[in-house]
Image 1 (cartoon, rainbow, N blue to C red):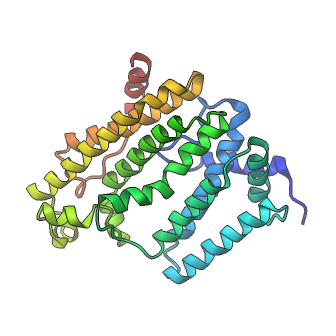
Image 2 (cartoon, rainbow, N blue to C red; image 1 turned 60 degrees about the vertical axis):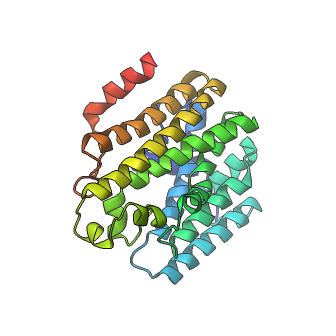
Image 3 (cartoon, one colour; image 1 turned 180 degrees about the horizontal axis):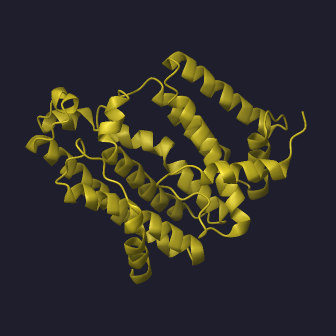
Length: 282
C-alpha cells in the first residue's frame, strides 16, 4: 500500500484540532512549519491513550492493542508503514532527530494504564508521570532544537505538574473508570474512605487531602518556571500560557473549596482573555 506524507500530516492536523487537551497541540502560537510535527506527535499519543481507555475490551485485549501499536511504531522506524500517521511520524522523527525513548516511554505509560489503577505513594505516582507526561515536553523542546539537560529537567517539572493537575481535576471522572491517582498512603493519612468517592462526598478530610495535593503541585509549577528562560518567541508564550492554564485549574479547585467530586473544575471560554492577559503581563 502506498502512503502519502502530505495526507498524513493533514490528517494529523485535523485530528489534533478536533480534540481538546490541556497541552497545546496545533496552536497558532506554534510556528506554522512545526504545527504538522506537533500534530502527528499528538495523534500518536492520543491514539495510544484511546487504546488504553477502550472500555469495550478487557485489560488483556487493550494491552494487546498497545503491543501491536508499539510494533507498528518500530516497523515505521524501519521503513515499514501501516498507515499515514506512522509514515508522517517516522518522517518527523528522522527530520527533527527526535529521541525514540520519549515515544516508547509514552506507550509504556499507556500499557500501565491497562492493569494499574492505584498508586501506593507519591513517588510511585511521580514515576508514572516520568513516562506519561515528561516525554511530551522533551519532544517539544527537541522540535525547537532546545537540548540542554537543565531545560529537560525543568520541563519535566512542568509536565509532571500539568499531569498531576489533570489528576486532581478528574478525580470523579477517573473514579468512574475504576482509577484513583491520589496516593493510597495519603488517602489513609487524611482519613479518607472509599465510600467518600462512591458517594461523591467531599468532607473536610477529603478537602484537606486535595488542598495538600494542590499546594504540592503548585510548588512543582514554581520550581519549573525557569524553563521559560530557555525559550523565546511564540514557544515561550505558548508554554507560559500552558503553565498559567494549569495553575488556573488549581485556582478553580481552591475556589470551589477543594470539592472535585461534585464539580469538575475546567477552563471556560470566558477565562481565555483573563489568562492571555496574565501571559502578557507576567
